Length: 473
Ligand SMILES: Nc1ncnc2c1ncn2[C@@H]1O[C@H](COP(=O)(O)OP(=O)(O)OP(=O)(O)O)[C@@H](O)[C@H]1O
Image (cartoon, rainbow, N blue to C red; front, side, top):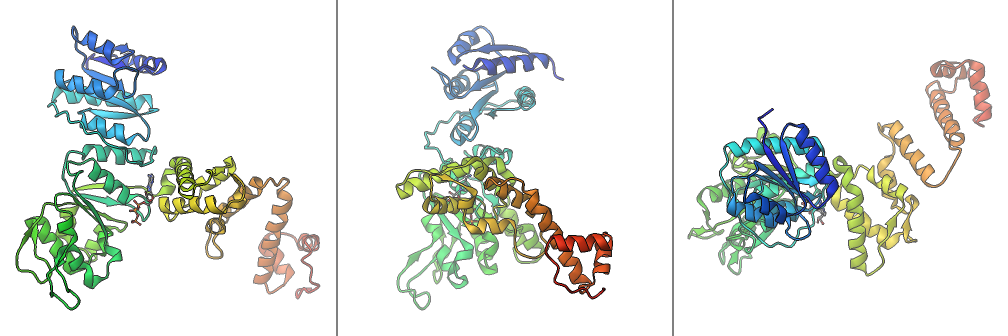
């Protein structure tokens, strides 16, 4: 561990001050705590710490204001800003204000200590950052899951740059939302953000869509048309499903990226543009490159910074918040009172696989808002496809999982003594299937099942499976 350093903690919450002071002192550092930014500033006139940790929201001077003061007066002291989870705006503002890192609350003490150590190391080779403040209306991206916090961090780190970004994630995970946030927190935020989905444009119209065309360039081109590149000039062009871009368009795109100029379809004058590209795909671009379906040079050009958005089922902890958010949104849109989920309904929904990710969840919330009869939503009120999704008919399903889901549903419906239902059903399935395999011969079926012949006969009677035929008798 490094030599003793002086760490200052500012938070108006006594328990946070206590926890951090204890942990930091235990780590061998000298820790002082302050109830307010003002108190810290009074002390700093006589003494300087090595690292400051400050809460973002406090009575009086807030963490960002303190950060700005520190940037002005002591830009070499790393400041860690503690924010509420999901507060993208504060996260981004702290980076823009020159914070060393931000620490979403509630945090793990070890995580906080690791950050402190990193800040100490950083200080040794510190170069001050510029303090820039941008007033922003918050982009509502819900995400408390660690992987989403990583996404927020990336947005914050990239907020002062024009760098090309490649976003990876399944359909409906929020790629466009993240692209918008990148734009909104960039120096280009007052310029246009143009989104275009490669998969949605017919191949033969793609070039003209992107680059525009001159009047008369082809049949039907009655007027000059400015393409998306021109429309996005000065701003950001979001190219969704980039993996679906045809080869010839890839070549043209590559040229624009290297020369910052292009020709309209049928045009002879080069057009200069300044466009930041954010590309997204649900496909594995490396694989497409390997298969010869995506240009390798274009791939490298786009793949400068990569942001991965996890699929929804990999961030289950965010599902309750998303459900609540979209139920309120749908209610507002439809002018009705928001539905609430019964706890078991919420936990049922949380465990679904959500192949359509956040978009599917949003649609389901709309469905529920319109279709569920009561104010409180029960599992039975959910759309049938959600139930089917969990127990897909036929195929090689995981029957234990199906059984789990069945049990969940029965219990959610308020059933009890469910083994009385489940065990006979289980035995019936086993017996009927074994009999099918032996063409109805009970002796052989008993063997397959591992029962004695008499046991099988008794079970068949009890379960009412007896059809009077047994070829082995
Ligand atoms: N974390 C989130 N918080 C709030 N809303 C979200 C979140 N993620 C996605 N959404 C919403 O879900 C919907 C789908 O998101 P988006 O269009 O960004 O997904 P996508 O990954 O670009 O999908 P596709 O690849 O199919 O175009 C949008 O309405 C978006 O606002």
